[in-house]
Length: 368
Image (tube, rainbow, N blue to C red):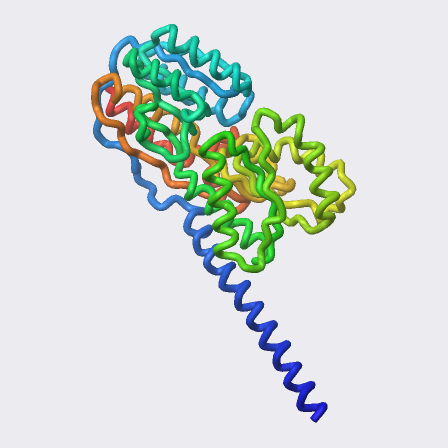
């Protein structure tokens, strides 16, 4: 009788282990399929617009930047200059330096200058509704980058077009990568800034994806840290997380590579041994520092970048469509995940994610 009970107990343990392993295996398989698909470009052919108006003449543009110290916004600004130089427009930049008051002030200044068009670089339209209404009344077309929670035309007409990858797609990919990187048993801290609608969308989707696809994964903490305050808040936040969770954290998922920039020094100077240092995945934007970390396997293992150079050209094209009284292009670039395995193929020697050079030729053919 005792032997029978022991045998039954052993069988229950065995079946439990098999069930546990199968559950993990299923989660990893689903996530791995999605990541593998997104690790390579779906097509080598230009997927953007193939028709549009010729370039308008003699336009003066103001680029209103949330913070030009942000590597992504700075890279975007350079690509906008490149595109504008090709058609002879003029552009000047106003920098909000990451400050709420500063961003409101420079947008007010930009509108008061009555330019032909305005570009919003990382300025959330929800926070600037009244000012954007003023621009609309003056018939100044506004094109945004990361200016709202979804790419495309805005329902409230606050911007002509919001250029961005789909934040839902980006966030899902980051979450799936964390699942497979942790072998279906990841313990995750999510970093976000819910004052930005696109950031809140990303973190909400990250959490939902982890909970839906990985029963053995855990969201240990959701850190709502304003992007402008990352340098000040990150050291004490890292210290608190290490104290609260000891060696349990396996992964950070962040909505912007900037969080990892400032988490890195605190993690490396902590008392955590190398095997317990969290591995980081970013749901945007793809900074030069991020690619260096991925290449050297220094805490960051992947990012889901924005094609910033392409997007600079798209911003100029959307403005040109507005100047010519045409509809936006409707183009949204598909998200792609970058890790050590595919980085050399899609990231150039200057650490720019610029995988498809055909857009320059395509846009120049439209404009000229």
